Amino acid sequence: MILPIVAYGDPVLKKRGKDIEKGDADLPKLIEDMWETMYNAHGVGLAAPQVGKSLRLFVVDASPFAEEQDPDYEMLKDFKKVFVNPQILDESGDEWAFSEGCLSIPDIHEDVFRNETLRIRYFDENWEEHEEELTGLAARVVQHEYDHIEGILFVEHLSPLRRRFLKGKLMNITKGKVNTSYRMRFPKKK
Ligand code: NI
Image 1 (cartoon, rainbow, N blue to C red):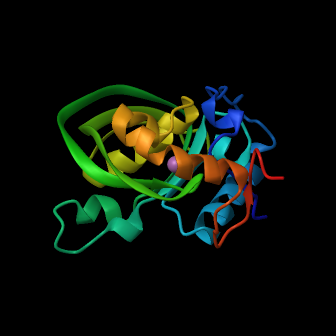
Image 2: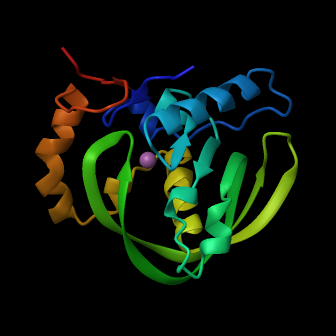
Image 3: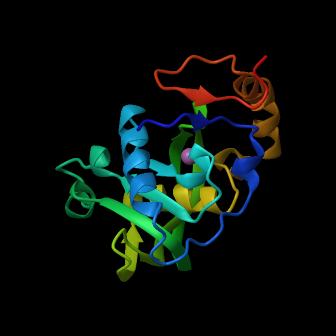
């Protein structure tokens, strides 16, 4: 089932998600709905708060970023994962800029600086525990989604000047004055 994606300005996007209880009976259906919702919106990641659930859960499919000439091609081409109750253990490496977007903040793309590498521990959809080191674009997508479950949006990484410049656009998104190919839920739509 495709779920509406919550737009910028909704308080659920500002809350830290709660841990999911092991064996939660509703989890498989929620994961299935999140995949469907993400692919329908042509996203590479989707976090539970973006469908109105304040939980520590996100899904990522970074394979659209995989280009054969890229050194990270092998890591990216099959990078399709579910992260349940993830914990970033460490971030390292140089900070680098990448133009990020977000399904909750349509039509805005801005350079965000993040560390190159991270270590993360998480459960998959079968409650198997993993600990992995990620780098480059795989790390980037995970950092963006991890922020969501911490109640942080990518625009919060921008300079105050840049955010002031975007204020009007962000307000329009909150009010539903934006066109998207997918269904959204706007906090202030009249
Ligand atoms: Ni996002």
